[in-house]
Amino acid sequence: MKFCRHIEFSTSPLFCSYKIICAIVAAVFFLEIIIFHGIVIYAYVQFKKSFTPLYDSSKGTFIEKITGNKFAKSVIFSAKYGGLASILQDTVERVYITYPKENLNKSMATFKLDTSHSGEFLYLYRKILARSRFPYSELIVDIGANDGFLSSNSFNFIQHGWNAVLVEPLSEQLHLARHHLSRYIDEYNEKKQYVKYVEAVLGTEDGTVKLIISPDLVSMESHVLREHDYDGTKKVVRTVPGISVGRFVKKYDIPKNFGILSVDAEGQGNKILHQFIDLGYKPGYIIYEDLHEKYAETTAETIQYLMRAGYRYLTKRGWNLLFENTGIKQKS
Image (cartoon, rainbow, N blue to C red):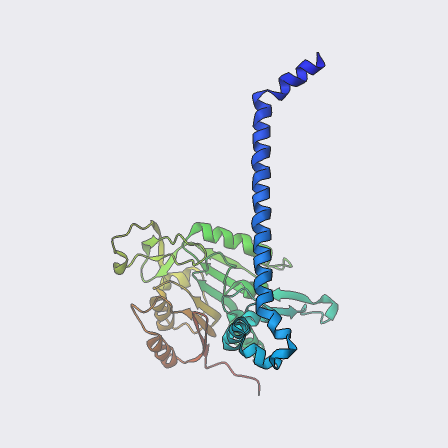
């Protein structure tokens, strides 16, 4: 009787389904092993083919053998022309050490990482620390803050206790910013630090604005609808709140002399920048992405405009132009 029940179970549809699933899993696993080993063997053969001649003492000096090895030459060429420097800049050079202000005991050191796109944070923070005084409020206004972390110009400053006003029209990105920053704001609960989140497009007018939504969350290039966007292709458009710079600075109590203005507005940046300056605002430093500003103002025109307003052009990091208010004094 027991044997009969076993036979009945083994021929049931459920048991057959299990067998089929197990067979598929086994087949996929076997196929992955074959592919993986094939890749490993191919890589080993290519490596051996490329580097074995370098150890052959009968074929000249090591330098002579490298000059005749195509793969080695390509690696050296890439390293020589920025490859190695780029790797260092995007890895080791982004790591830095901080100590508590009240305790310089090295055992209390904390490792941190510069999360800005091209090292803008450390470049400016070192300049700020090198000053005998910093006559600006420790506030960063980040226009186009996105998720508040990836390639963010404000994240690290907030980590160091700066106040911030983050402007981002996409609610889902602003939600991520709140999540990323929650553990760093007013870390010791001293009520000395704040971060304000503004879900809007900063521009020239108050009201509503049509925004083209970028499908690529990595590039983060959603932007205000422009005339040349009508190219016949279908785009995702969302209506979002708009606020003028004049109303923005009053509503969020932005001081005339604040620390850093970061503008990444995908084609609207020049209008925002001009409004801040024309209204008499003089941030200590300006981070300005002009990647999509060619329809309104060239890089040279922006530099000339800010120079007339009392700024010094420092450098370009990635897509960002960096400016310094010439009123800041360096240490003697």
